[in-house]
Image 1 (cartoon, rainbow over the protein chains, first blue to last red):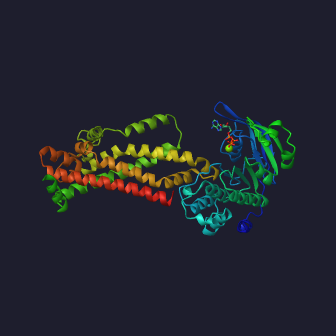
Image 2: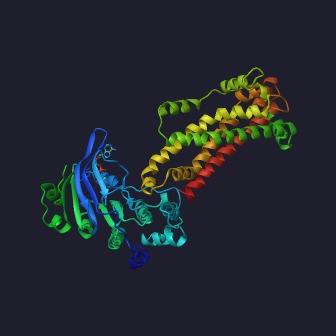
Image 3: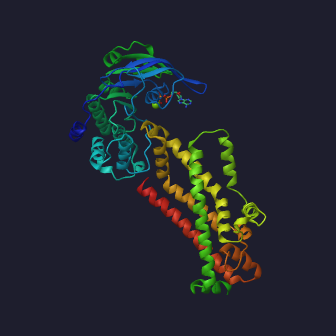
Length: 250
Length: 229
Ligand SMILES: Nc1ncnc2c1ncn2[C@@H]1O[C@H](COP(=O)(O)OP(=O)(O)OP(=O)(O)O)[C@@H](O)[C@H]1O
Ligand SMILES: [Mg+2]
């Protein structure tokens, strides 16, 4: 664990610009064919502690992250980064089910470095693998790694471009408790280094540990956006109250 | 008894048999490579671009995989015959004509399989590559590289089809002794003449070759799985 702290410090996240923040969603509506998935979401994400997206299955968390990443296009409204389009290389994402390239773990990281126009030398690759504590797996075919190992590799890959905004879609959903702790530590450090983390999670404990603010969605609508303390101790909406109480919200 | 004579022919390195096998291999390998040079980029292009009537193109491409060899032979024959549009070239009944005809036969197979392969891989990679802001050229390079082992398998499938085929080479090659006679046409001819030892010998060689090609395909896949996932 100490190792990872050291390696994060080594990793030059210094001198972050924030030309991609704040991220402003204005009346963002999204549909797939005839199905409305997001209904006029208005939310502004500011620099600082991680923003955590919460809400029941199918509420639109993944969709919101993909919109923020520019992988989907809203049918209404606008998404702006510091008032304009996102600068090149300012965003990175770890998907709920990351896809590994048909190469070794190290080659996956090297690929991401090259794609970001960063030197893909061994030291750089090594640093990112160390950060995610998967250096011993460097030479293994990435697609043969376990789900949890792949998620950590995906995190290393996402950090290769030294993003300003890191979008994480349930980054610990297939991790054991130790790896979850490890990834949470990395997220906390990445966030402390000035990278804006926006993450979806179902893990209320994790949200409590990491969140600065919580965006709560249900059925494609923004129900609540509040500071984490407020949200967990005194949720305003009925939906959030029952969600936190462990009731099914559908 | 014929079987024993056939093995004698193979083991003694019979000159006729050797020449026939060599011509077969040359024509088939060249035809497969020629087809691949055109069909692989074409397949990849269809996979990665959207244009009107794309679905029609895909259906036609898939349909062409089942082109009857004799019809391809006939088409190429008509093109290359003295009175045909390319008759001037005077290559009918030469190994060149056979190579071209087999390339035409195999190209749709390579194009259709490449299209499917690259399109499936793109569907899988799209979000990750887009998120990494990989440009169009980088995308194509990545897809071709990550599909490399499957592309080799596709090449071998094309090779197998060409190697086993009789109709096209018979029509455009003419099965001329010592010049355009290949394994399959010799087997057909010698069988009808009752010269079974040579036919059987060639049959054995042909099957061995096709088995070897499949073994190669299998080991390429196996190796790829272990080293690149
Ligand atoms: N391409 C699509 N076509 C049709 N419906 C879709 C499509 N993509 C998403 N949906 C639907 O939109 C809704 C929101 O999906 P999304 O993946 O954003 O949910 P989520 O909040 O991430 O859920 P989970 O917690 O299960 O990951 C779901 O009901 C889903 O079925
Ligand atoms: Mg999701």
